[in-house]
Image (cartoon, rainbow, N blue to C red):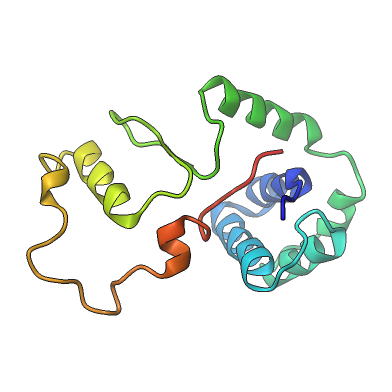
Length: 152
């Protein structure tokens, strides 16, 4: 189901501005859980307020009832589009082409390693020994669903 996440992005913007990156990351996790695990509607103010409360945020209700952050988030969306970001999620690594949409873990890891200079290329994946079961990505991670963020 497609959901308009513009208001959720406003809430994330507010979390960063008022509470810092740690609370914003906690809110993002609460939003992902609400949407992907619990089937919540990220366009619904009650669902957004609940996620904000779980993240320890104060003032979310006032933000949701206002137009605060609309201009700033629209500017962020426009900047992303101008940078060529058209899909969610999109991963941007220095010196590498952006990866858009559901990207498997192996491709993400190889691109990150190339970007950081710690690997000569994708031939370093897969590792010689299989990963232990705890390290195996979940189906949600492999499909990119857990990390997706929808644009406005």
